[in-house]
Length: 254
Image (cartoon, rainbow, N blue to C red):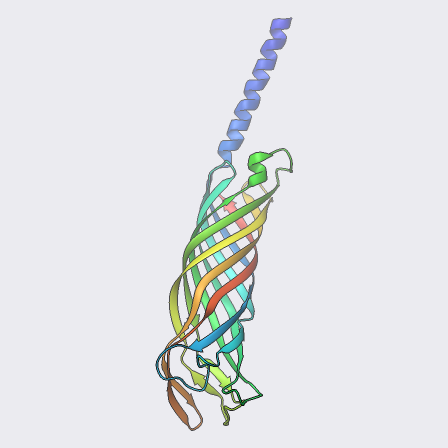
């Protein structure tokens, strides 16, 4: 009788082990994910740094403001390693961002002019995620709920449209006036966190946050134009373009 009990227990253990192994192996595989969400940027400065200086955004009187908020949409392809780790490559588009900068043209000026310009960006990144609780305490949370941490590095292409300035302060005239935009490719990196909510065997809802550093804004040298005005302006630079993005996405594992 004892031998039969031991045999049955051994068989049950073997079946359970095979089931766990199959489940672990089944968690591995390639996946595709789409995301959409909200992007919020930090304050920044823009100033002319070389060439002839106009009265707009000189080194002595830089423009100061922020780039507002916009939308973030992205796609990624990755591989689930099946042991609480994921790796992926992703592309993300930031749209709808607009600079709103205020600046004076002299120490004698008490009022300020306002400069606006659209900013968009592409990011191309290689990254990875780890699910620490699933790794260290798999029985602590339900299987359908899994928080994660992630990081990534790559390139960002930042596209800054022409800056449009409304007259104000010492910079008078009928306006508006405009100065050149610019496009630059920069090193980019990200850190983030989120939670996976398993909806089905192969479908997961991803709710996440990412901090993105996309490098500095860049504006070309050229000509300031406006009603009765045409004068050269130098190249301009801005502070780091940094965003806080909040997204939701669906992941399908093949």
